[in-house]
Image 1 (tube, rainbow, N blue to C red):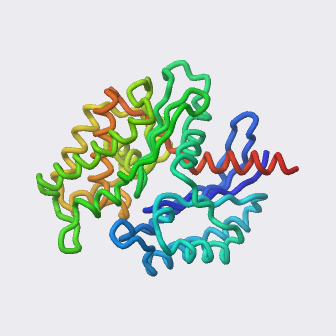
Image 2 (cartoon, one colour):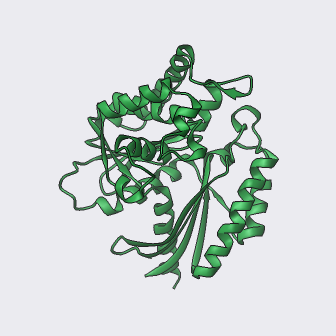
Length: 320
């Protein structure tokens, strides 16, 4: 097995995985997996630039991760940056900072590359399961964008569209610099219309309705699963490969959209950094389920981060 480190830097969070990986068998053994909410994409949709405070939060997390990677002795590090840094006019500042701290340049991947990595991470361990019909539709609801990938053992088609939970919150649920608490009916209607337009765009290239199993990734989906299970705290093992019915997703989404900040913050499994954006994230998930006619979503804790680790291990093996 090859020891690798993978970093996924998204719009809302930056995550680290250090793991021993065997690309041939698809085995991946976690050594350290963690997430830090840094809101790198704060204000990007409006200004087109990465804010200085957001960059410093991200660099602070990178310094912490550098110490962990060194301590665990990873043979190869791959750092992938997604939606926010694709959109920013000052992304060179971000690239230089990461290079100085971690010694590698962040790969600012395209939406298609992001989709393929998400699919690999989410489905590698599902191979051979006869209780999950194929093709899969893997949906990764991030902060700035959502990736849609349809495939069996390999990707058939993928598309990234700009309906992430942070982007939708900033675009539709903020008034006078503050998140509306709770959202108004007009705000929800406008957000829903934006989501539906993005789904139309995704469906131009990805056959969403051909999918037989919906696999949902990232914090909005895992948080909905935690709420559905009424977990006393966030529990990765309970969440991974859990199944949440459409009816339950609808109930949870409608409840979140009626709730106040304090009520959402009081949910035991809710990460503090997700309180303001979970309404938008849950609505994106519900809208997707309605579009594809999914009766349930299979929730995966393994996603683009695991896909990055698999690719890093394959590259390391090829270079030996």
